[in-house]
Image (cartoon, rainbow, N blue to C red; front, side, top):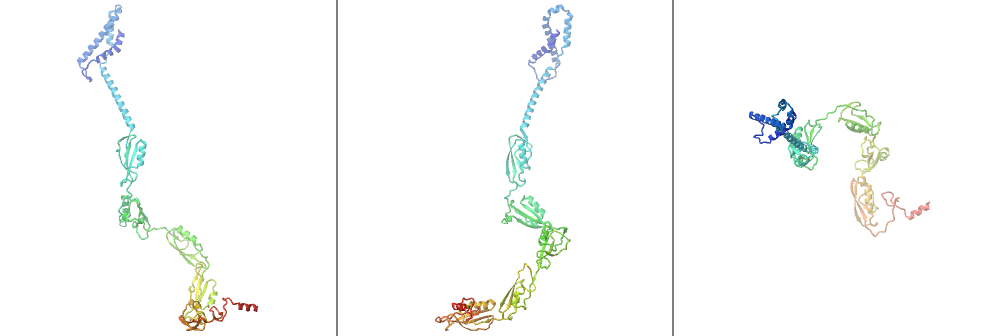
Length: 504
């Protein structure tokens, strides 16, 4: 009997309870049991026990004959004492099912949420940030970037203006994110320039920032005349562009003063005496000294070396200060006073000078007297100077020579060489006359062999006799070609050659 009750407790009772649960129920919602329901359950349990006892009684009939009656009562008592019925079993089963279903649903939702989180990403706020930041983020999160660019005054070049997905929203990986980036201000836009001369440096700087005129620079430079911050000038790099046509891309500059530059006197002046000029120039350039070079002759300092300096050696000087040094041009030649010297003495007494002696007619200065010299007396000439000196002496008043017997063709040369080249304006006119002389011969002059004024015209009578026999060759005694004398410049005739040969 105890074995039966043991089986009943574990299996039979469970099956019976399952059969009863299959019956229709008034309500599936768990509620608190009434007293009637508890009595009904108690009766049902007793019925089950009695049925179990009856079913086992047939199996144990033979044993009952051998057992005393007290044993059966003991079994019944033991069964009633050992069997415990859990009245909340069905409630617990329903709760277990609900827990299993809820856990499954929550697990599914978690998996879905986890999958959503893995394939979606939160979009950052890219407004005002560089395009490179957005590209780096997109590459890291497998997002495609579609970029549109436009000019904008608010955002600098390559800064993001807007985005298709708002910041904080999710976007699926592999999708595209549209961005609009700035190209900066329009470089082709014409900007109306202000009058910078009426603006301070800070106002000009603020105007440039407000109008994004990045190619308009503010330049400051030192000025000895203007105070700090005062306007100097405005320039456009391309001189062909008018200020009214200035575009944002055009290069320009507005200049303001930094005031006068002041340097500390911390440069020690060396002793330049006897130093080459090249070394002084190098020192002045290195230390930014405004050096002035004067030249002077010296009998002791070679040409190209320093004779003296305006500031003493070891004195302190600052950048941009002025200084002067005297450079030697070598030993000088003093130009003499040629007054009282003859033309021959003037030409030979001064070999260091290139003296040219010139003689001209003069109506007031006597013959042989100095009229002028091209370089003043006592002037010093150095190796750098032209040492040519022209000395002019007087020939006195012009003396008109006798040109009778000369041919008309010789007259232009004679008058130029004798008078016009020597400052006398002596001219002639021609008059043709009948004469036994050969045609073209000067047979008479209105005046000859006497002094004439500096400007004078003489009348020359020329023979027009074309039938006269030719005169024998004449040999003038000098370069004037006086008739009857021998001219060494002409070749002697054959008879003269024969006479000379016999004389030898």
